[in-house]
Image (cartoon, rainbow over the protein chains, first blue to last red):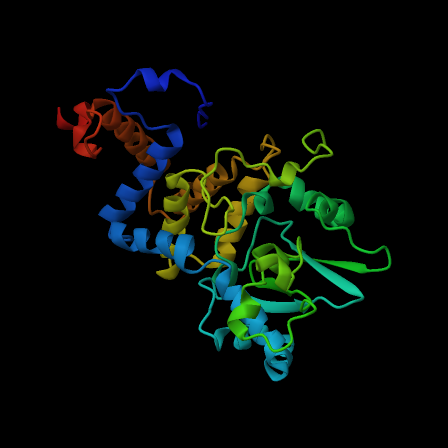
Amino acid sequence: MSEHRHGDGPEHDQPHDNHFTDMEARVKALESLLTEKGLIDPAAIDAIVETYETKVGPRNGARVVARAWADASFAEWLRRDATAAIASLGFTGRQGEHMRAVFNTPETHNLVVCTLCSCYPWAVLGLPPVWYKAPPYRSRVVIDPRGVLAEFGLDLPADKKVRVWDSTAELRYLVVPERPDGTEGFSEEALADLVTRDSMIGTGLALSPEAVR
Amino acid sequence: MSACKASSPLLASAGLPRAADGEPVFAEPWQATAFAMTVRLHDQGLFSWETWAEALSAELHKPGRKADGSDYYDCWVAALSELLTRLSVASGPELEALTRSWQRAAEATPHGKPIVIENDPLRRG
């Protein structure tokens, strides 16, 4: 399989030749074969990469959450039919997946995982962080959610319930964190700045207004 | 659970490029390409997302996976290759030959020049 080079390898002493790792060459092979067959074109591939890397990202999700905080009827719609409510803001999933919004309350904290593989609401959160895809997170969140949350620096009160939601290819979850105190009268833009990606996965909370000053 | 020490193993991601919000996204460009090709093929209706999720899941659950998930996109590429073989878009030997050809082309390309498959000496011969 693929060779993973480590830090101080001798490659810096070989300035002249090019080299593809097995994985690089294999992806090149797939790309050239699919291009030749007319199934993909490189420009479209670049455009998709760029979209997920820079344009989509967690800011879409933050806007959904901010709207829900600011607008009770949107929040109600989001609770009832998250797929439609989120689509109304222009964010739709490429895989035709359904969305469900789970709301944090003073009594309950929600946490999202995918134990099957690593389904993730790309349309609202961009590409998943590496830890979300790592087996330790996926296996341990179900067994010991509080322990995992503590590793993220999130210590919840003992009487707060933790609900873990397991994503599937068809259904992805978006956590709506609790609105921070001291944000009365904030615009939706200002509210969105408080919504971190982790708070929408459930491994963090929304920021306090002081934290973003 | 040896990979999970008391510190924050889940947050360890040394040497990875960062997205706008400071989090690692793709470790290497080929991962982004593999991801995008899959999205594109699905867009074009070559397979359903469910079919893809099953193919990826099968790879991810094979024994011998790395505990830190660093081979996630290796599994992704394996799943895509397997699926394309199953759909008769490509054959295993064909992909294998093309992979080797790209490797020879890379070795034969002077540093600083774009790597094109025509640089493979065996292809030209």
